Length: 188
Ligand code: RP5
Image 1 (spheres, protein in one colour):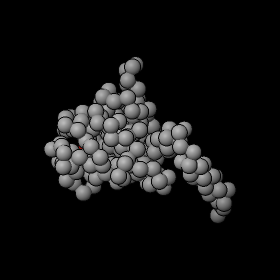
Image 2: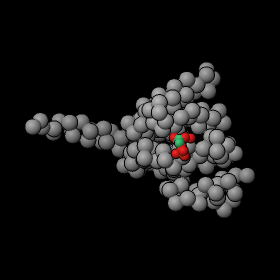
Image 3: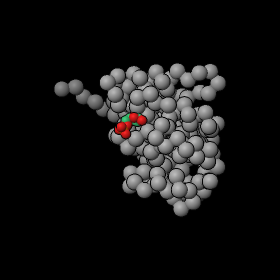
Image 4: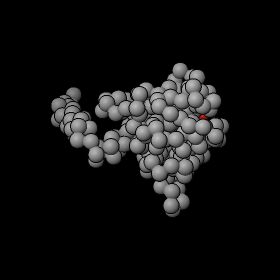
């Protein structure tokens, strides 16, 4: 079973099921960054990553991939990611948050983990789960919630920019714009 091209909706029953929901679609013909999350409910947080990727014109896709509810789909996603051209995976999850670690276990593409506050523990459970990967299978762990999601996208951009001069320039312009915003701030 393989995920060929943009969306394997027609080639893989698992991918087809995942593509059925309108929120769960590839957003680019040749995505370089995969943004995945354990549930549709995580999208409010992970959308901060998608916004940055859009702003930097980085081809990306967003999918729901649940480690405990769709484990076979998770394996398929990870195993086919490199062949589809993905270079970085951003993975957000709440609770036990085993999604980033399981993806990292199944691919050598860098995985950036975003803890989502989804339980009574306000994301501490997810943070500790993601950051405490045992030695040998790394997951780059970002902050809990939207700031972490946004930074995951920026870090993905920095990784890709090491081999893409035009993206480097867009990233530099984005950073300069943030500096300018602060320099223009006036206190009441
Ligand atoms: C995790 O459980 C997801 O990543 C999400 O953060 C959390 C709650 O999922 P739902 O019950 O909203 O689907 O797997």
